[in-house]
Image: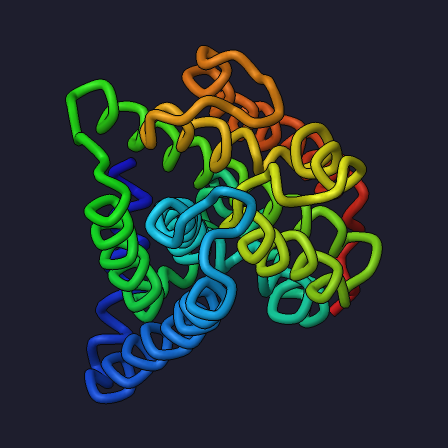
Length: 264
């Protein structure tokens, strides 16, 4: 942890040398994600409730998911650019030569301060949605929200680690991972019950986004699951995010063993 903090501090210090650029990037993240909020508002403004779900309840889903992704995106940037900045150039050899874990070096490679824009926007929407939905922030509800965010961060980090592992076979793996990262954020910010059965299965068992977003939010909102899942599922389902990260680390180790350098 001490080494990671030193690496993160070095990354943030480099960005702080250009404060205007860092501020504009952060503001840009806030405004771009704000457009997504406007789209959600327009949907509910036009059609009212969607299958019994109100805009305040959907805003809670939206806020939590964006908080998860903002943290994971800030920490996993090194895996995101592994193929283009490390494998293709041969710079990955330097990471292997250092007597420190490679994954730790990648996590501290480029901690993006601009992701704070998405984080702040997610927190603002979460607070507004909770007020609209009448959420009572008791100690168990806060603990479940924190647990869900931790599981979501682990899940999205697992997706980025999986992307990094794929880079050992194909350097251009970014767009494949974007289907799961940005596409996953878009899918998870709406209740699972709105989707078709095959898509619900995909979001629950293949890439368990529902386990870190949908099921934990139901007890926070005080709602029963329209799909029939018992209430206790929401209290344990975020563990699926950590399991996904563990599975991704297995593929990561396989990719590192396969690496044969560029010969540079």
